[in-house]
Length: 292
Length: 164
Image 1 (cartoon, chains in turn purple, brown):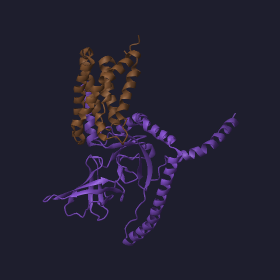
Image 2: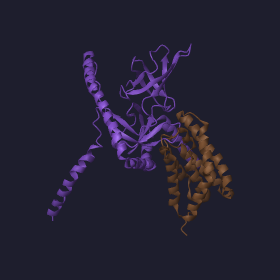
Image 3: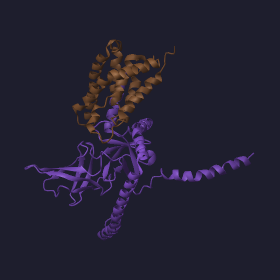
Image 4: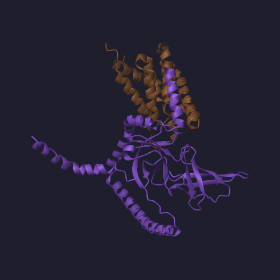
């Protein structure tokens, strides 16, 4: 019996490391155990609620004025942004290139962190029922965050940019130099791979996603160059990035949907249902009374 | 007496152990504390196999492992295989293990769980290319330290609910 189980296990291990055949199994078991995830996160949910209840008037006012300030600042940026976008579209039109597609996003909340310090994954509270899919790009408020690697019905796992299994095509915003930003397993560091020593990269440069792999949308910030070192005689420079996303702090992230796909339906029916239900309940009993 | 009594207690403690292995610390705490997380599921399973070996089967242990794989995002099958091995080993020697003092059991658990974690991280390094780190031994160390308390708690549950 033990031998049989060991054989099944090794079969599963080999199947999963070479193919994607086991995704449905993982998703099924994941759906079964997903209540555990929500239970495990309750201390933080309750903590958040208690915090909200206990904040006093003064704190709220302070927070409110800070937020108002922020809205002002952001709306100023947005005004500029609208003008710039139009200008950009005009210029792109002149150049004959395709217009950029805006993306739809869905807010998700963190409900778990992979329990090992050396595997950088988080669990979020949106699954296939909200339209999440494997390979989907995930952002936080500051930049690219990671991608979805496994989904079940109510939750999904997100692999962070800085996991050592993760890499994505990027370009330096200032000079347009392309490269690949790979995670090295450190929470706050990425490495730009295979950069020639002559590449035009400086410390402090913003690195954005180039969208070349087709998986991540183009033009979202990935990180800033924190160090660029050239060893004499070496063929490649070693360039380290500091991710702009708060990989270890963000509790809310955004799932990015390609624009062709209709906006997630999961949110809308619930609104319609609450509006329609009273009428239906009133209407339906009447025919049943007439039939006898 | 009902021979199959208190199965739900076993199930409940195993589920609680799974819960304890995915609860995460506040983000503001240093990440290295995560290495000290006790390996709860093998610990609890070990207790039940030693005390009521006829109630814990290899397949059940394997299925618990499968659920654990999904919960902690490990490759499918790895925890199942290791838990089944642990259960098998404990089955072989449960009569002798019951005679051990709690501290002796703790020492044995230190060895068993270290082997468990080492095998696990070796398989992870092989299948997924994870970096191997000796820090994985901190979890078993802390588990062995906690064993007397876990033992007392579970023993009280076992006698209280007459699990047999």
